[in-house]
Image (cartoon, rainbow, N blue to C red; front, top):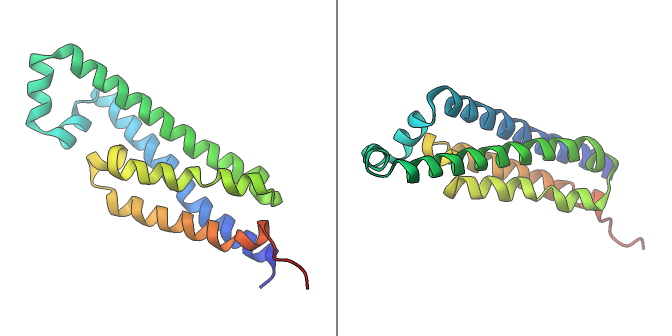
Length: 149
């Protein structure tokens, strides 16, 4: 298989998680905006969220702001990944291959601390991480060809 086809397969395998990550982030942002964050926090923390909100409303409000900011950051990672895929990765520039590692690393972080935790998307995110890493590994030879004999 030649390097250009490996690059295309890698790009496709990276495009799928980047699009799904962006769409899922937009979905969770929509839930946060329509419910004021209560639905999201109840699925993640249950009764503890209600107690926190009653006893320490300022802490709960700060926590909601932190969650909203992390969602905006996740949306930025998704859109950034799509832009890199369309431009630098498509042209086979080495810096783009390194930068694209931000996508699976960000999704791994979300598995443990972020948006996937509250909705039970851990296994879905694990599959997206697998696709992204596979896409990066498949396209490796396109960006770093071996020495010519």
